[in-house]
Image (cartoon, rainbow, N blue to C red; front, side, top):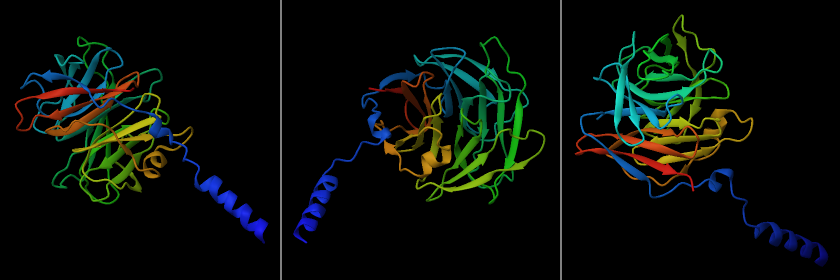
Length: 291
């Protein structure tokens, strides 16, 4: 009896006192002191989505939300607007996020403009515009495809989209609920008719204003007005599991007037954030480098 109790005690001491192995997400650290470059007021005051350009290194594609032209701006990492391109056959009802990744043609990077904002829950259908990333500012945007969809549970306000580089599926995260909802448009997306997005459940988050995924699909950021949350995706793990089976780790974040846009850089060495100006005199482009 005594020896059995001793064995149990030793097992308890060994496992009970053993330090937990750090989760993969905890091993990735970002600077708490981001670099900041100012944006000239009036240039892009309502930034809602952005991605780091694959065709023009050192620049970001940025768009503004409702009430602005159907165009994207090329914003340098130095904070200077290099130019703007119109998106043909598109309407900016309420563009709220942008993704970049693979699409129908191999070895081609596509931009995904998500017209998914719906503050008053008034739109029966929503649209994601997809087109090859322009090679330069002298290249006009061509072959714009419309991915029209509806939600299975009625109109939904959303501001975050993820394009999975591993599967080419599109994920949409709603904004205002106490527990936001996750939806999927599986690849290949139908561009011939309105499809119904697949409901995938909830996330224990609220007021989600943007999201981004790394080039290799292994790291995910979801942002709100007050936080940027980091999720690490394991090998062969479905993207929904990566963000539903773990609570994201809050990263260092400098509070912004109305922060919505977020994206990893093209080499996954850090991430950018950009805010709408709201009532602030000006905003800055922040970059949080990995340590």
